[in-house]
Amino acid sequence: MRDFAMDAPIAVTLGDPSGVGPDIVIAIHGDHRADLPAFFVIGDPDVLASRARRLGRDLAIAMIHNPAEAHGVPAGTLPVLPLVNRQSDTPGRTDPANAAGTIEAIDRATALVLEGGAAAVVTGPIDKKALYDAGFHHPGHTEYLAHLCQLRLGRPFTPVMLLTGPDLSCVPVTIHIPIAEVPAQLTAELIETTCRIVAADYRARLGIARPRLAIAGLNPHAGEKGAIGTEDETVIRPAVARLRAAGIDAAGPLPADTMFHPLARAHYDVAVCMYHDQALIPAKTLAFDQTVNATLGLPIIRTSPDHGTAADIAGSGDARPDSFLAAIRLAGRMAEIGKSAGSTVTANA
Ligand SMILES: NC(=O)c1ccc[n+]([C@@H]2O[C@H](COP(=O)([O-])OP(=O)(O)OC[C@H]3O[C@@H](n4cnc5c(N)ncnc54)[C@H](O)[C@@H]3O)[C@@H](O)[C@H]2O)c1
Ligand SMILES: N[C@H](C(=O)O)[C@H](O)COP(=O)(O)O
Image 1 (cartoon, rainbow, N blue to C red):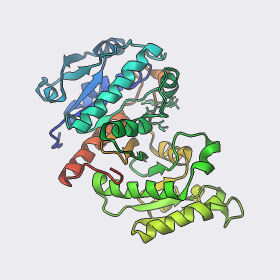
Image 2 (spheres, rainbow, N blue to C red):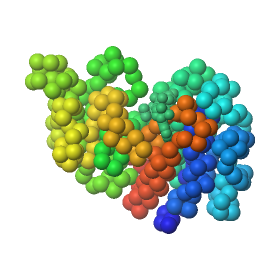
Image 3 (cartoon, rainbow, N blue to C red):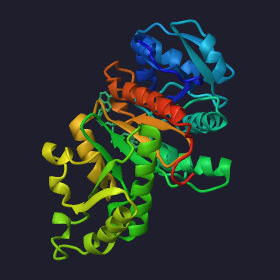
């Protein structure tokens, strides 16, 4: 039963047509629409129609010109805001000609949320290398969305990646950078800024007034008191001390190998990790099908499934929709919490 009270619908992008984004959106629309907050798709209707034929699914599409029209679309019909940059249906194979449409969908969804026409954006997975090859200069959605918000609002935003599942939520402080660059980019200031955004957005967007943050070390055994690496003592510990002095419930640096077992997880709401895989390996290993990627630190709500394009199974009907479903549900919940708190801004907004 639908119990979402949002006025504006959620904008959903399909991601790269080489991937499972279209498959999953078609499946979700067909099987789960009544249980979800209202949403519409920004995409190429011909890609959706072609993918539905491949999957042997019926799909009725209604073209809309603005998000408000999504509410008037008959039940069982998928509202689609069509792209200007047309795409082709290429499951399992990237096509450089599709990149412009993939980026356009993200641009328009973000603009609609910033203008208030959409409540949130839920992004389908992009093929990062395909976009880089087409001249896209941002590591991923996370960083690109911050860039778009800055362009629109004229001030910078620090985007924070949160992977959140039923039993574990994790934030990587450094995100899409080579592992060799992590020690140089990991500063006490970045750790502190990230944690402040996490604490503020947990309060404003997730309804947890004073989240407990567990801060991971960088080195084995959190540096073994400086014997196996120094960053834990010289960078992370001072950041944790300043966070605690500011009233944030932060503990650490904790040895990363022992902070994810069930008893340890009972002591915190979110693990703040020093690099991408330190956060994403436990999150995806524990609950690949339920975990959602949400971007904190922005003046918009953005969620996404935790998986990628899964090009190896695109167009086959084998893609599991659970993480995408969880992403739409979480976006709806975050919009409701933000609305009831009267809050649309974040720590660094
Ligand atoms: N939010 C995003 O846009 C996002 C997130 C992660 C990865 N990516 C991109 O996706 C591409 C592929 O990444 P990858 O191979 O590391 O990860 P992946 O998640 O696409 O695939 C890993 C494995 O999990 C399987 N899998 C993934 N999702 C599934 C689903 N819903 N149902 C059933 N099986 C599923 C795949 O078939 C594959 O075997 C890369 O270009 C990466 O950058 C994008
Ligand atoms: N780092 C994410 C992951 O591995 O799941 C993924 O690449 C998504 O990144 P964006 O949301 O920034 O595209």
